[in-house]
Image 1 (cartoon, rainbow, N blue to C red):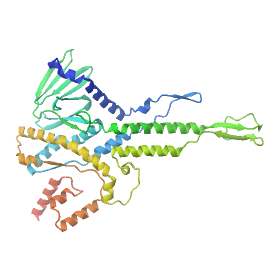
Image 2: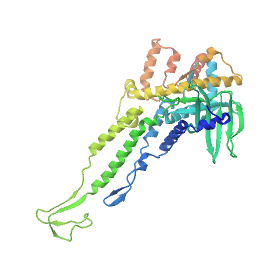
Image 3: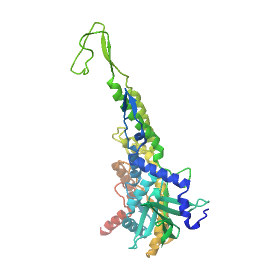
Image 4: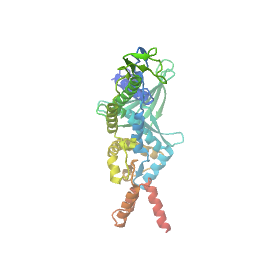
Length: 420
């Protein structure tokens, strides 16, 4: 595909499709940092003067994206399966701080549609992970849509750096000095970085959740800014005098604190346009409702509705959209985590920890959504099931809203039973 095989990664980075994708990522970063389209609104003339229009920014995007991430990852995931396997992976998770990494993965995946995770052994032979900035990532796919390589490209002080990830090695290049040259090459026992991405109808990478709500947010900011401008302009009004004034030298410059005397059948009033607050309220509420529906955010979470004395079923109904969105996000995370587990298994074998295929296949992931719950009702139901023998102790512990580490809790229960 490329004439210069030694510098093929430079041509890949400079392709039109890759540059467009990186520009989209940079635009999202600028939007989240506060650079909205409303700030580009030009000034205008009013009553013979140049006015700078109101530019009201609504940072709903951050709140919505944070809700989507926190709903799935606020509670750490639970690893289930064979005890020897889960214990080994829990140690890796704790030392590598993977609970924080999982949160960051979903955060970047919702913002930009995809993120890459490179797993490696550090100098102390500890398993660690590094998340690559989506603005620096260039995944490479062959004509069968198979993931074959990844290029990490960034510039520092006008010097370009290229980290080319192959299935068996990582090569570092730079153009410092004017020519592309290889700096060093590393063995990569874990293989290619893991790609996490959400669903996209076009292409192999995901699509930012922000793109679905961005047009609505722009219209909400525009509507609110225009309404505030219109309100302040209309309330000033134009003084109108009908008839003859009996005494005085015309209208005083400052009406407040003074008065005028009018002849019979004369009239004085301020003429202004009516501000239709009901129309504004209807439009704004419609946009807000559409925003929450498309973002799959319950209105109760954004203080848009009043609730009280809810049962467990009512809570589930209110958060049904959030549950569906959380199920999709957990599905995309699970696809990447399963690839991560395969790579962690290889690295653990380098350190002398091996597992049978049967034991490794029992390894599972349980996501605990941050849905509000009526804990008393759940515990009462679990107590009834235990009394009638309708559920095992381990299943009860898995569904206990106060337990996050199922295996650890089961070990404590067993140790207490042995002591008794």
